[in-house]
Image (cartoon, rainbow, N blue to C red; front, top):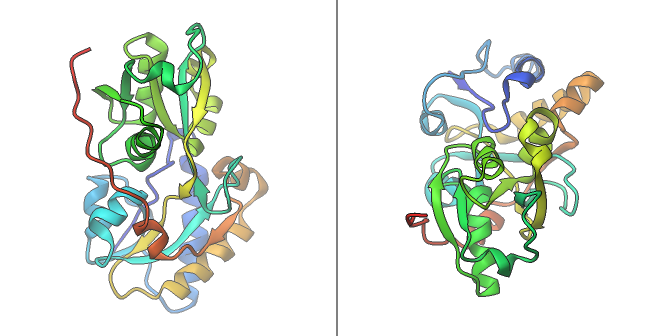
Length: 253
C-alpha cells in the first residue's frame, strides 16, 4: 500500500504532514479500510500516482487531466484559503527581482523565464494559457525541477522571472531567504487546485470523510503550518476544461 502527500511536503513541515496522515490513517482503519502506517517519500511521485495499491496521494491538475483521469479516483481538493481564489482553487504568482524596474507582464514577454517542469500547471501551463490570452510571447530558458529552484534562479539573476504556485509562494516566503529579493509582478487566473487521488475503485466518500475529520482534528499549529482550511469536491470536468498548452521549448538565453 502507498500513501503520499508530496506536493507541499517541505522538510520543515514533515512532522505536521506525518501527523496529518496519522489522523487520516486512523480514521480509515476505524471505518474498516486499509491504510499504511507511514507516508511513502521515496521513488518518483508519478509512480505513486499510478500504483494499483495507491491509498491516497496528491497530484497536479495538469497531469490529472492529461494522463491520470480515468485511471485514478478523484477524492477531493484541499482548500488552502489562498487570496483571490475560490475554495479549492489556486493560481500562479509571477515573480521578478526586486531591483527589476519593469512593470506589467508585457514588459517580460521576451525576458528569460524559469519553469519548474513542463508537466506543472502552476509552473508552466497557467502562465502559458494566460500569456496566450494576452497575446504575449514566453521565452523559457531554464527547467529548474522545483518552484523553490525557480525562485532562487530569479533571485540569482540566472533568469528574469518565473511562475510560482501560490501555496508554494506562501511557504517560500516563510522558509526561503531568496524571496526577500523578489517582488510579485502579477498572477494568473485561478484554476482548480491540486487534487487528492486514490487508486481505481477506491471509496472516495470514505476517504473524504477521513480527510475532513483529520483536518478538523489537527492541532492549531499543524493546521496553520499546512495551511489547510478544508476539503472541497471539484468535479473532474472542471479540471478537464482547463486548456492544455504546448510544452515549453527552451531556448538559449
